[in-house]
Image 1: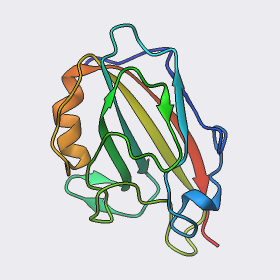
Image 2: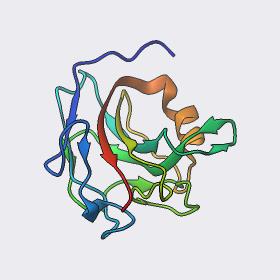
Image 3: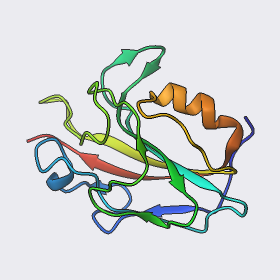
Length: 158
């Protein structure tokens, strides 16, 4: 894949770049997905996918590292974001061995973790089956990525 440089920008009304994610959106709170917005999407975008990944998690699994909290795809191109606790799109598997969003909850005493909310702009509308892993999703969408941006939040347990 070539670099997917773009001017796309991902934001949230719940937290700012590199700031704390409110407990409401974590495993210690209501465990619901935060609202996300994206702007300046690449020309030709026909769909989106969203992933939340914690690279600080002390886990190596299936040839990758960290912890996947959310895999969401089959999102249409006519949206500019997701509402809190969204029901849009198709849910893939997360590393909690569930489908849907599983909020931040780093191991106790492990300090502050970073959570990357990645938005991928795709050059075609996707009709992918429910339950894909992040690796399977990347395999399907990689040739279709026009641009990527991320919003990074932090969370520390306790």
